[in-house]
Length: 177
Image (cartoon, rainbow, N blue to C red; front, top):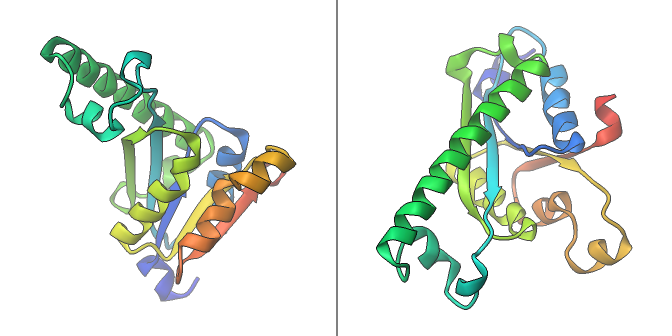
């Protein structure tokens, strides 16, 4: 591969879906040569807002504002535990798919809290793609149905429109088989 491949920054949105696994497997196949781009695996925890707090601005919940101190501490501990568990799952998944040979200095794994709905994942990925100046953003594609596609659109479709100047690869689950 050309020298410039090592200078690429690739962001992969990763969850527990087959299509996300296919996206990671696709990246591993494309960059199987000796030189590797900087690879950023990003998993966003979809946090549920407690029903009794449904009318509070979601950002306040995770900052602990508006919560009794015991609940704020409990929520923070729960999020920290979920992040740790998710990080371990991402590492295991990456290794299962053959990423164990990827140089550790070329790999970043990030688990974020704060996705309040699955529809916001594209916006979170777009934000982080801009933060790291990603050249390529890769996500899996899961078909949800015509009504979902008409109103919400898939994460991949949203990324294609939001990530101007960045290549967006949308990989279907069948690609990983």
